[in-house]
Length: 166
Image (cartoon, rainbow, N blue to C red):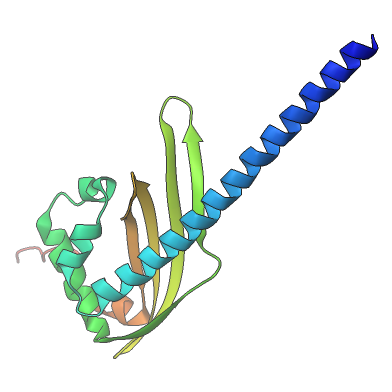
């Protein structure tokens, strides 16, 4: 009986050690993903907004984002509105963002990240929200939102639909 308890105890300790190693690896991987995704978001914001280069945006867009951008004019119109902010001056990414691992049965696992940046442009401030997704070793943009009172005014001045004929 004593031998049985020694074997069971040893197995339990071994399981605890394996679980501890697994948790440690997940924490390290999560920390690495946070560091990588934040650096990617930081660079993407500068590269896209410093010249309002839609190609920089398109080159970084994920397949999921490209799937909803069915009309190339959408990006042209969007960047025409964004340009109302003027020249990029600076931004600061909030420390509240980060990456997360999501595993869904039957669909596999994915790594995503979400960040918010307070940006300053020639014509005023804006808040940039950027969601990323990791495909293989490459981070890509999943969502990209810019909020600013300047853009709200510009969107309000633009008619939502063509005027009806008289």
